[in-house]
Image (tube, rainbow, N blue to C red; front, side):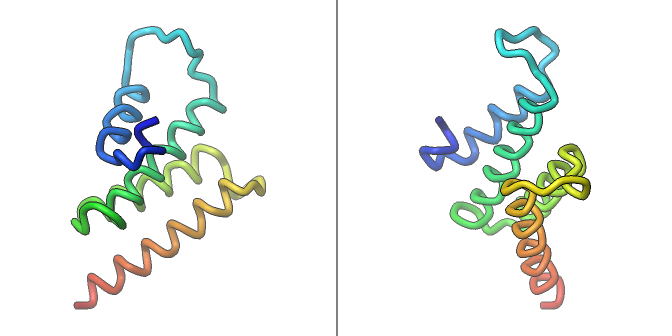
Length: 103
């Protein structure tokens, strides 16, 4: 809900809390569900950088989040819309990072 309402920082906090929680959940944290959360976390960081805060630290966090999603979901072994989108977004953000680094 937070992500869909463009409350990127709030969404990020919720996703991070879900991933690091040691308490049980009414929703089983399956591999598929964890992949969804990682995708949403990367999306949240990405949009936070693009639309809210042009902080290079947020940019690096978004790149790391996409990279982790791609690795966790094993996008190199399968093709899906999410994997393709994640790979494209990571490449675009890396280009932005290179441009910022060259200045």
